[in-house]
Length: 451
Ligand code: NDP
Image 1 (cartoon, helix red, strand yellow):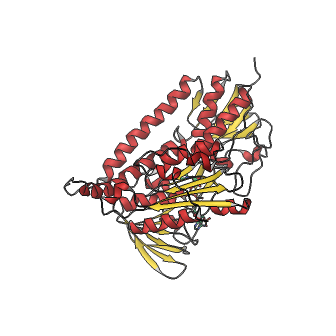
Image 2: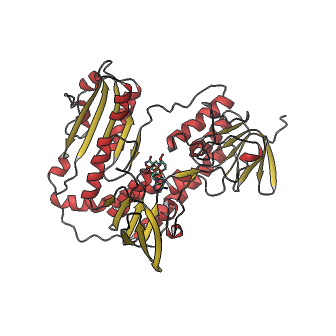
Image 3: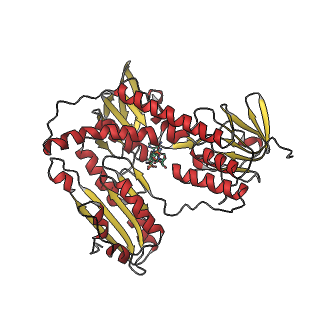
């Protein structure tokens, strides 16, 4: 009989924590987990999943227009925000209960309270304290809003999912995933939308052609983009109207101002100081390749470690941790060549090196690029253009990166990511027969490098 109440205590019921708890329990460990908000975490409850529903909703406005060129005549379509929110919430409730059932069926003990480490083997849940041989911190992150005059008049993605009504005018601040995705959502749903970013071009870190191409497409779809600009202050001019003053001195009026300026790891009030868990500069928990902190029996996975803040990465980290510690199967989460997508309109899909990164690392980099109007749009008034790029090491012929802006980019890049992970060469792409007519076939028909 163990001296501890549990073999594993997990703090945080999001993607990483839930996967780790379930897998550890499957390996025979006695596991408990606690979640202070709702099981499912950011991704399921107020992130990827509800966001994707809203992206679908927003895209219909364009689809209705395109449909007319294909002979469909439609009445004037109207949009009801409340219907979307209610249906989205119903599905999130269903997913939340599935997460709880999965844990229960795996034999995990569930708590619904804030958890705090009080000693290297003790976790406090409300009034009770439990002991565990191993503790896993999977507490995720929280939207970060810089402090400035009037910052209390802003919303973040957390609130955007539950607004009482759709704003007529919205300003979205930030140039990352969340800002770009929500600008597309609000614009597609009919709001007058402005995207404000402090840098030269949105999506810093992405391939430069992707950034420029997407930016142009967003503007074509009606989003106003202000670059090299920061909000200095926000003033409430009436109950629902915000006057925004920029550092340049210019002003805008909006009904909502949304901040998507990054996320902060949730390490406050979880007891990291009680056992001296080492934190990094952004407050993230520092871990080694096994997701182990500086305290031998305390591990951390997911956004709280600020490695790659993506759900499938947190899940991978949680799974590797559980296999290694409880499954007698040492596994290290591999953070290389992780594909990702920005669910902007049009979407961005990306895997591997950008052209800039490849040129810095390889002396003989070749770039293949194709830009075109998709077959679907050639019959419509839709001027959206698709961009595809392959980055190749000219010496070994290996494909180092693939990037796309266009319809279904996420779906297409998932397949390309398998090829790149498998070490595919450009010649493998070349001898792959395309699926015709499709946009994806362009990835196997680009023959001449542009640079
Ligand atoms: P990101 O880190 O992607 O982007 C933050 C943006 O805010 C950057 O453009 C940054 O500018 C800007 N910013 C930061 N601080 C300030 C400030 N003080 N004033 C003005 N602008 C500022 O964060 P997000 O919030 O968009 O998303 C968090 C993470 O969640 C992402 O990195 C991603 O890993 C994940 N995510 C993934 C999604 C997906 O897979 N589709 C969807 C949503 C989120 P700068 O570039 O100059 O630093």
